[in-house]
Image 1 (cartoon, rainbow, N blue to C red):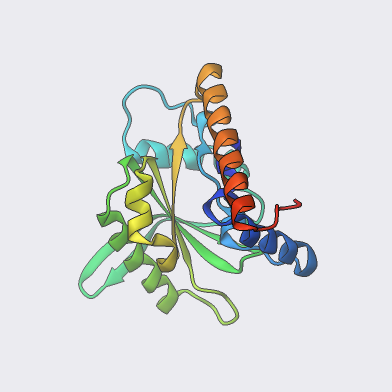
Image 2: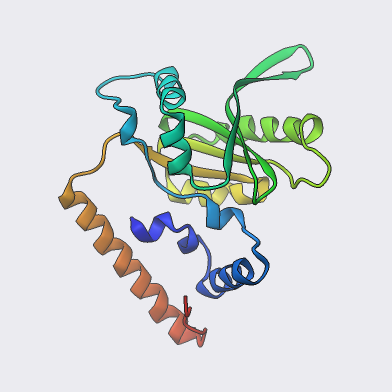
Length: 208
């Protein structure tokens, strides 16, 4: 889980190394170095059955803790941002701005597992923000869909990163120590397999 949260596991090791090098040399961040997976929202105190609006209200109540979990550089801008397309009104759950990335960050909360139709909804929001809210000198907005679960193959097939969309799981309760240990061992196993595969391909080991 610690390995997955770095975001680097989503890319080949040599590309991750290049991004870290650019970060040090040019102080330039990329979205893959910013977003985590999963996000621990145990501080919200949500127990039992709850609705998406309950999650949103709890986040607003503990906004400071939520921003700390998102990471440094995030600034809150709006809740239930109204997006008017033709004669229809849509409402984006949360809107942030990231100072280092120089981008608007749209966040949608989903109580259940990620569904393919969530991509279309987020794409509509991002294109609207790009047209009506993006300022000169800023990069195109990025969307973060926070959901209770996801299918990795489904997300891979949808190629969400090409649309500027990231999907991450949120946990309202910390897993037990046994589960965390299992996840950590799995992450270490995956990391070792990738290092072994890179060695067979003759790729350099990441030094960072």
